[in-house]
Amino acid sequence: MDIIAQIRHEIENQEQGAISFARFMELALYHDSYGYYMSDLPKVGKDGDFFTSATVHTVFGETLADAVCELWQTAGIGQPVLVEIGGGTGSLCSSMLGRIRETAPEMYKKLKVVLIEASPYHRRRQEEALREHDVQKVWHASLADAANEKAVEGVILSNEWLDAFPVHIAERTKTGWKEVAVTCAEGKFTEVLREPTAPLLAELAEIESATPIPSGMRIEVNLGLKQAAEQVGRLLAKGFAVTIDYGDRQEELYHPSRKKGTLMCYYRHQAHDNPYINVGEQDITAHVNFSAWSRYGEAAGLQEVAYMRQDKFLLQCGLLHKAVAHQDTDPFTSKAMKRNRAILQLIDPAGLGGRFRVMVQQKGIEPNAAALPAFLRP
Image (tube, rainbow, N blue to C red):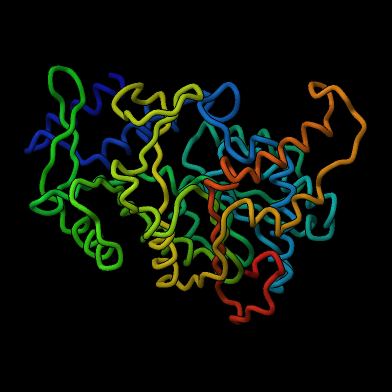
């Protein structure tokens, strides 16, 4: 039985003959045997389906490593912990550790790394990527497992984690909110509208209390954000949470110009908006509601201290200082030219720099804007 048969079987066993889109997305991405993220197929990089900032060049990880070291110092943490959630192949963590080993060797000697990764395939890739690093390393299959352990003092980092959460899709009709559900007709997955569940209705009411949604518009709602924020808050005793992802504040995310929502699929480096093809073989994502992430974070003891576009964040972290002067002429063999091109790519306002947002939250630290590192100040 493949993933399509698994989903059909679940649909057929529902009283209404349909499942929520969130459940469809969960099965397509995270089914234990057939889910996209659980398979051994490459997902990231030229052999996969998409690129991330971390795979563009190690300079991204180097810049984040410098920022994390400053955050440890700001929090007065002597035994630093770096937690990475959803680190994929381990390339980001590896480049960060390499930089810390080079520039802050005393911190490196004391460092503990906690990696939270649902995919067995990616946990194996992470073990390979980090094998050369002589630091304490601990793996957890879920954030819930990690949060049930002793809380840490340090930095919790995620890069493109929240966008892969299963989302509910709601449509504002003339008669009120409807939820998009997935059924099967003539052998193909198709959509039907049904009454929203109570938890979804409650979140929709919260959204509309601040951002009116016009009739005919679809939006994605991530009901997993609340629990994730609670677990991050429980895991972090003292320090900072740094979340990097594509998304927006609520008023921009649910702007009428995004009438069809933000759901996107990535298959062999081709982007499209049809989640019902290439099931189990493609990535499915949706933009993050950073207003909700901040709101749930506050309830979990995480105080928002900074929110900005990735280009501004990286520039304030000193990314341009990592450019290399050179006299090379061959762009195919020059490491310096490759590094400098990557820097421009990471801050391109029409690309990675403009699409991604960075939110930094703190816990267990006296609120004092003047004491924050310069790269977090407006």
